[in-house]
Image 1: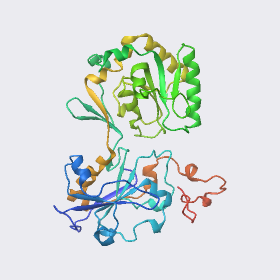
Image 2 (image 1 turned 90 degrees about the horizontal axis):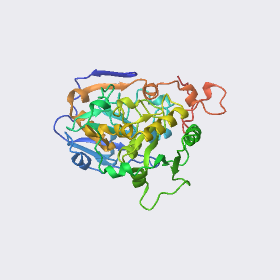
Image 3 (image 1 turned 180 degrees about the horizontal axis):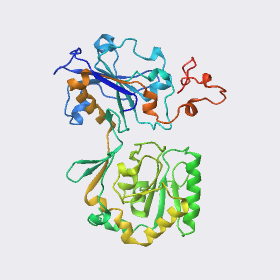
Image 4 (image 1 turned 135 degrees about the horizontal axis):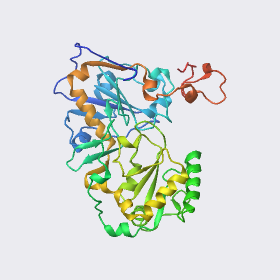
Length: 382
């Protein structure tokens, strides 16, 4: 693991055993994290270990932050990475945990003060200590199949024909592609792709229909019903092309009997059954429009996109489920007593070069790079 060091210390028996472990979710006036104090989250998720008390109350344990077994820091705190916002005292046996759901490609961390700061990580990245993806694929026997670094998916021909909740809904589909805008300020490159795709679809007498954000409003029955009954395909715009980053947006298609067309995001083969989606990667708009048109004209081909339903379910993963893994780690003596440290955390989080990402507009030298907007001293960015 890049930038990660670990060695076992036999000295730390502190607060270990069957006693209650304390987890503090660090908050500030401008950075909050909604969590119910107590053990309710662990009980609600039927966690293996439930002897952890989760809280945002800094006054607990007499306000001595070093008494907590673990402190969770949300990514949002890194935008105000100043000493006055952070714990003043830290015990060597504590675990400082980094948490984020944001794509690292678009949200790099520039401050060198985060290097050597975190012991464990909790994110959508598969290399995290607490791997918490947005979605998961389960076999019908309940086993989690994906995401994994390498999944051997069966071919569509090896699966049973698709079984629809309501076969009539497939027969009522008359429109090609729908996109429901959930973010009203999409990237310019995404808008350009949309314009080109829309033009290419018109060559096949098909259309791309956009709903929300000032475009066509959803009908009284709602847009979800519209996807299910009218549209063959649903456009999934991931906000970033980042490794391991694939959000629950794809469920808008899967949950409503439409085929997702995925633009952006991570490597779909790690996450989704082969033959259940169309990836925009490696295609241009003309090719994509041709695939859409051919599939609509070939009902048997379209139905193959749903063969995965005979073997798998695809579900959203509750992000609070990560507290289960955190509590289990705190109950694992070997893991808890092991000294762990992300020495070069900035590069663990964002693998690419940081200079271009962190150099502010108008700066002429790298010495002028500031560690986010609230850090007043200049730093060198690797």
